[in-house]
Length: 340
Image (cartoon, rainbow, N blue to C red; front, side):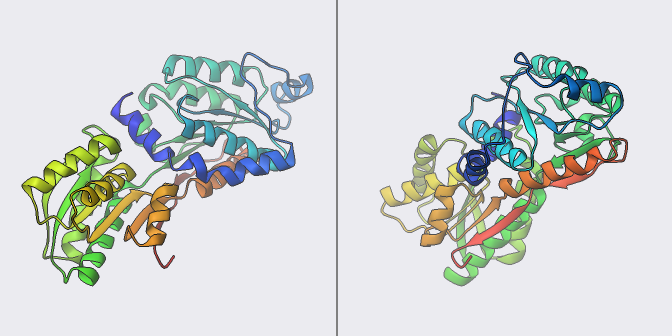
């Protein structure tokens, strides 16, 4: 899996449990449904209505990167549940990380007139332009991940809404929170390990630059003495253990992902050392539990359930006027601390 896909899939891992409420809604309502493009059993009246320029059908095609990762399975079920609770049908597609299959399957179901909106986690945004034009020409509102410039576009577009993670905002938040922890718990001084993402990961440069700037502003005497790329918890424990040998005075960690902060807790415990401050970006359920218990000072948690709601609700509004200029949405973030 490419590093770009890794960032998207890692970010979405927060949703594996976070979408449980939406999934329960689907079970309770009994109105959510999922099909594939090959099992077209929708009513002919919906197709006729769409083709003749009538009201668009209350059906949504949802195309994630793949249904292989459990997190994306959870997201798909969450979308089915939320849309189903609003009286919509959902067609779930599985491109399995194949951009050609993704565009072909989407093109087929949009041409069929079976769907009245599309929600896509595009595998290859730069090559997705023709698909966006097709949706526009058919009058089918579409929501895609990322910013307009990732698709070679400038700003919002008619019939298209974009939804992205603000990595600069996230970096600023983790740097500021670590600074607050250092000031309150370590007397303003700290030797920091910065756990970062792999080269080429989406948002890497923006997040890391913002985090360093914010930390320097919040706690000028906190020093980043080591930087390590950590994307896997097990390997991360070994990496941090080696870092502790070279920097025995490490007492704080700032991480751009959950795996780094969880690996740090294990590594410090194994070495018999105290981890004074620990701040991360991501906020999966395990991390949030450790925040509540006080083992992690703060987590900048992505609010994917809220984003799911705002994304779907935006598509519903766009149906009223598919030619109107769409929005540029931002995935909500929340700074979670022990006190809330």
